[in-house]
Image (tube, rainbow, N blue to C red):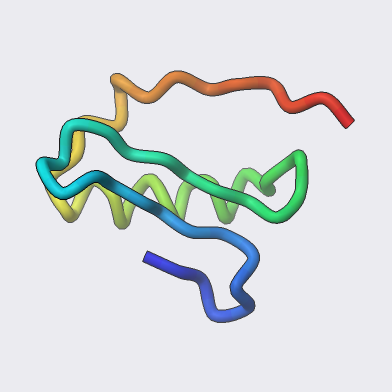
Length: 57
């Protein structure tokens, strides 16, 4: 999944064993995060297993 402004993307491997939420910025708005999580959930990913990494500037 890719947002309309090309700022955020969901990327998974071919066997769907991993999922990354990528952002062009170190932070992501709560609204965008929820939108991406909703997409991932609809695609069958268990988003409760995601590990959130605090990005340093």
